[in-house]
Image (cartoon, rainbow, N blue to C red):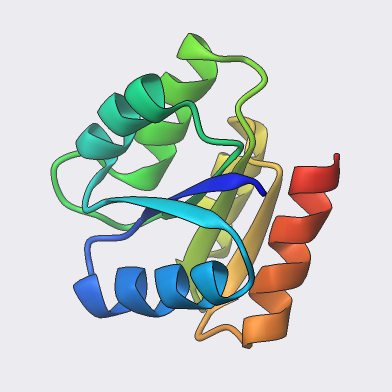
Length: 119
């Protein structure tokens, strides 16, 4: 099964997302900010990254740009709060494959993950 890197500065969101993915057979690694995400990506080589846009240290968009510079084939799905439309558009332009709006329904997240892992 695919390995997913879950990146969010909120521990409860990482825990919730990781638990859902693990219950559905995915291997999960986590990072708490964008800088850590880039390092983990290089070390772990995940199949997909689920990344929050708004984080301290290095935000999701800058992390996305660094990931895509390192690996142009990196599959990244941005996870965003409602009302961050301009940031979502910027993320799509930077190479994000999709986005999910928080709070998400479990099946929405799983469908986005399935779609990207099969692409």
